[in-house]
Image 1: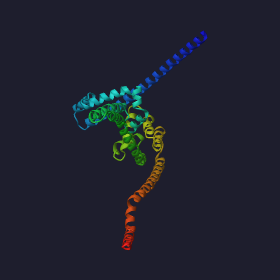
Image 2: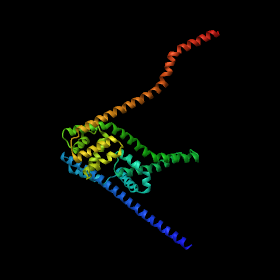
Image 3: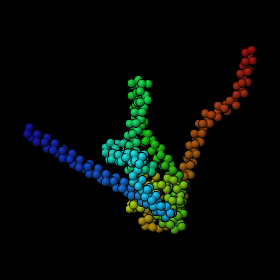
Image 4: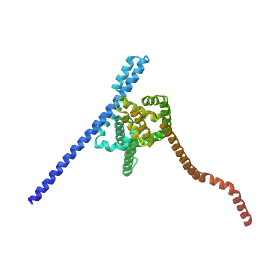
Length: 338
């Protein structure tokens, strides 16, 4: 009996020690994630401040008054009204992000879709979390207030539950639609990006100068990729390496062609070399794959149009071609009955 008691105590102490070790590991992982998030937030703020300082310097060189810049800076540092409320919501969401509740509401899939939408800072993730919580609270209250006294208890509960689900899922559906649209835009803009990069490299510009030109002058033809390159350039200006600044662009959209372009840019930035011929071959391959994709779409469209024609044109064709014969047979039968 004593041996069994000693063994049970030993097992309990071992389990307690394992729990302590697991708790320490989890606390260290949480601290590492928190420090990484704080570092990313600080780098994003530094990039925004550098962009604001660059804009202020441009305004000063064009003859604007320094007092206007100071007023804008003070307004940016001390937001008021709706902007202050949004900032407060964003900070609240940022504090919830690393909690178990926040990780359930903003999962890795949601963070990846936010990055695909162009929302790369922690402020956007905090606002997304607050939007999901607010939608899950406000919409059921509104629906319950409007449906009160008009529905019985069972339908009232069902309406409130449906409003809760809809309010919780609306922000995610919004970012899903935006992310899918941006993924399609990336596929459409890749051949133009390769051609512009080959042209700019052919005239003797460096990688940094080429990216700056595409960000500044070709935003109309590359709306998605130019914004992504602008984010990468801001991160590169704040101290990150070229590989670190372009890594998010390579991994966010899940596009193998975009990954290949990013790897080529990193190699050229690191080792140098002529890239006109590889870019030309890569552009030709992209155009060929785009033609194949268009042929596939045309084939699917032809199949769909066959069904539409059967439903819409076939009845009219039967009426036109077989209608006179049917009428003649009908008249003949009527005359025979008479």
